[in-house]
Image 1 (cartoon, one colour):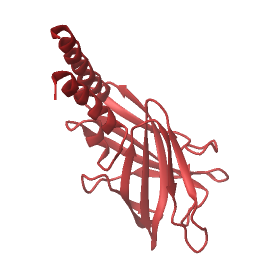
Image 2 (image 1 turned 90 degrees about the horizontal axis):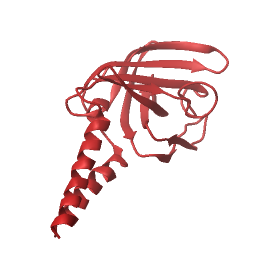
Image 3 (image 1 turned 90 degrees about the vertical axis):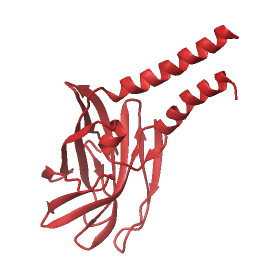
Amino acid sequence: MNKLALNVTAVAVPLLLLSLPVRASLYDIVCVECTLTQATYEFNDITLGHIADGDITFPSAIGDFEIEDFFGSLLVAHDVTFYRGTGTYSFDSIGDSVAPGETITMTVDSGQVGMHFLFDWNGKADIDVLNVFDTSYINGEMIYTSTDVDGNGIVGFAMVDGPFQGTDMATNFVVATPIPAAVWFFASGLLGLIGISRCKKSS
């Protein structure tokens, strides 16, 4: 393999990885040196308005999280997956005896990160939640702010299965970063382009 091909691969592989689902904690997705400083949730209903909010805890480093007192019971989120590439993602909810399974979607635009997870609560398992975050970098922190995923005028995603159907669940995260993730991506791409340029000059 010649130098040009190696340099093209060095640029293409990171870009490909950015577009793939990532099973990891949020701060690992931003950068390995980052620290999750704040994680919260909010629960809103189109009829009842604001219902609840509180803190999210991460007992492990693989992306799963918990809400200790969620309407009197422990909520355990699992199979948390983040989506960094722009596009529309579809998921098949499992459904239950009350609501049959259906396809749910989220659209991730430029500058956003999508998230899909399942949670178990009070004997109910595998309840689907989608979140799409606007991302910004302010004073050394990456801020992940939930948006209105399904266009109903409320931030978060109106759940289609489980005991909270029609209620929107949104999560928000703040991650302390030494350097914004975009700078790392830009720098790695720039280095690859410099390598390509040098190869052309030498040939």
